[in-house]
Length: 557
Image (cartoon, rainbow, N blue to C red; front, side):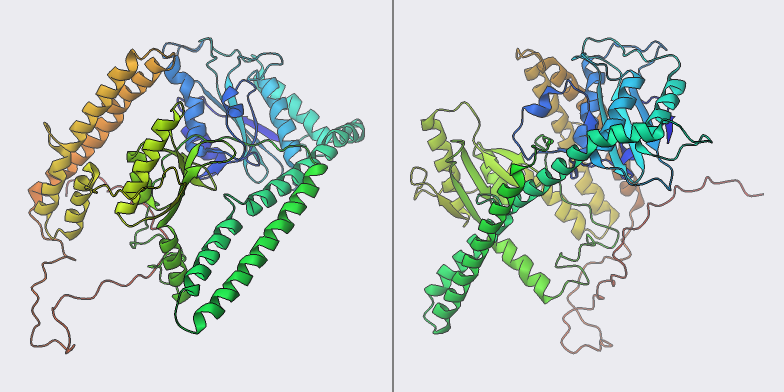
């Protein structure tokens, strides 16, 4: 085992990226299988319901938060580099460690490094990530909640090396030193007694939780499929054709078999849970889901997408069926929590719900919407009824409670974002650099452009938060000012430079041209209505590598 201490950093993004072996993303969640240990004073972890997780971007933001909350805290070296990162690497021939063993190693290294101290409930924030084979990464922010700097031992490398030798002896790992350890057998037996029972119970609890998720009647995938099958059977029963009732009966039998599978899984989960302790779960914060980035050939490379070259008829029919299922929502009061919840729907339906006052809740395995907390029953009924009227006005099927049902249909108007999205359509149809420059001008105009207006919105929101009265509000205001003055300013500067470059080019796009709707005399397709060439073939589904920066120009001799 070798422990390496990296130079301190100002942000947790790079250390977390190195620990994961892939970029930090707001679409990927980390469970207790990856984050095997964390600091003791993270009250936020216990304030969420079971089954939630945090994304990698939220973990990085959580570690970076002390930098914003304590902007004047300086290290003993006179800098602001508060992110401490150490990685533990095992020998390639070492055995595969279990989850409890990685957790034990993480806590022992954290105590040796001074980032975790027994009895200290106000220590610094840290996590331990085990995302790559034979490797463990500890990432900590050395700024404490009381605006002081965490003090680490002066001989930290030597102390970590000594602790690693003790861990090697207890776990039977390969050590870089030569010669056997006479106490190794005794220490291995003592550690095995501590971890054997914990490892078995943890695995059993994880399997029980997985089975419960599959069999859940409200949010499980089997219940969703069964509901769609029952709905299809009900529709087939009304068909006048002779095959309608027969097909409906077959679908009802399929639904019954699915229900039997659910019951069996619930029984197995209950039996597994009897002898297992509860497995720790990680919470998640609400995060906005962004569409996946397409690769260089114009599609995502996912075989389940209809535009993928390998997508067959079954894949296309399945995606069409799922798209139709997204036009159906449920909206009603939950019998367990008493909250007014809405489940199902596509992004357009989610946008209508949010404009009707609902709050999105995004989890790893589900997404639903709820009304804000603190509303009386009359206000909840008003907002829910308005949401049902708006959804049905645009042809969504809504299964709702009798209290929220209505025959009213509110008129649907295009939202403000649609005018901005129209700029993307203009750019897709553009054939010259001047047309793209005109579209980008709407974003980068120095007085009334979209980005300038967005900066004013951020500044106004920051001013509202500044004197709102809650302790975190001034920090939120500072964060909004930072986004407007730094992040948004960089985006505006880059887009303005691109717009100016296109405005000076006056160039036609070589692969795009205006369709003349005319066919030349040499056209070999008799039914063609224009001379436009076919689209280029898609030869690969792997993302292209980022282009290398251009080499600096040198004067000719």
